[in-house]
Image (cartoon, rainbow, N blue to C red; front, side, top):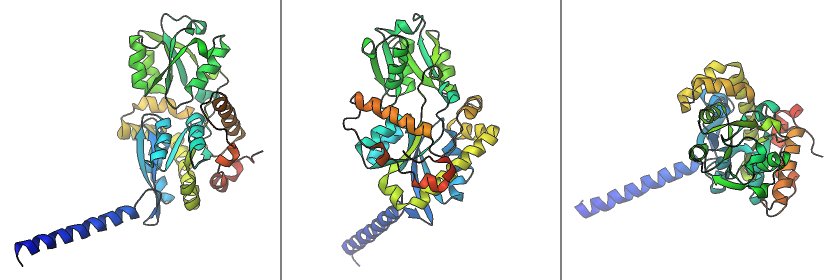
Amino acid sequence: MNKLHIRRFSLIVLAMLLSALLLAACGTAAGSNHGGKLKLKIADISTNTVFRVAKKKGFFEKHGIDAELVNFATPAEGVNSLFIKQVDVAFGADFPLLNAVSKGDYSIFASSGTATDVSASEWKLFVRKEIAGASELKGKKLSFSRGTFIPYLWDVYLQQNGVSLSDVTLVGQGGFDETYVALKKGEIDAAWVYGAVLNQKFAALEEAYELSDMSKTPVRLGTGLIASNQIIKENKEGIVELLKALDEASAYAQAHPEETADIMYDEVKQPREATLKDLPKNPWNIGFTEKAYEGLIGQKKYMVENKIIEKDFDLKKKLNLDPVRQAFPDRVIELK
């Protein structure tokens, strides 16, 4: 065989290998059944314990889920990643969930059950030192994370204190690190911050102090799980098992706080004391309650009235509660 034939033969072999690899990749695509397990890419953030405990302690594996966690700066970014099929399942607050279902073929299929007063108290309002009270926010620059419920929270909080949203300037930012620098430099005057790590970091600012927290408002942050209708339809039993895995992981995390703190430090370097402080305030109890439903209704009304959602829709048609009803029938309301 001459050199030309050898070269051609090598190219043919290489092409066959590449084709085999591509076929293998297709067989392990997200949302597919691979080796008897449902392969899912799940959007996560560095402060959420549930998904990491589910993966580290084998709850995903126990329930037949081959989970890949994809980290984002905020839950809203994770929800938005559904649009480009970067993930299959995401979790987030009412605002990004409603925004997603209003734009595409997606459904909210469960609630985490964290819309509580205790959880709300972890959302702290930090303002510049020269601002003595809420009324002095008039004319100021107020931070919000893009694609989140924060503008709604600002609207409610300001109205409570006699200030209109039109009296302030909302400054959209990409993440809390950007917010921290802007507040320190005086580029913004106030910001809502969540979680022990961030609250401690912002509280250490010489230029700012904690003025209030979300529990002093009527706003309660519902958190839900979302996926494409195709994923849910084609993998209904798998989604049921996913919900069971998450519920078991949450219960395990609450029962083993020290071990959970170790896992979070090993996985994302979150300080152990931060995990131990946050954990009891955010236990997931997978289901779909009246409070979760009312939260979605109220948030949708606000988003439609303020043209955040351009075209109104029937909320019930964007809720697929069959999987969570099958997993936890006693935790799911009948929609009115």
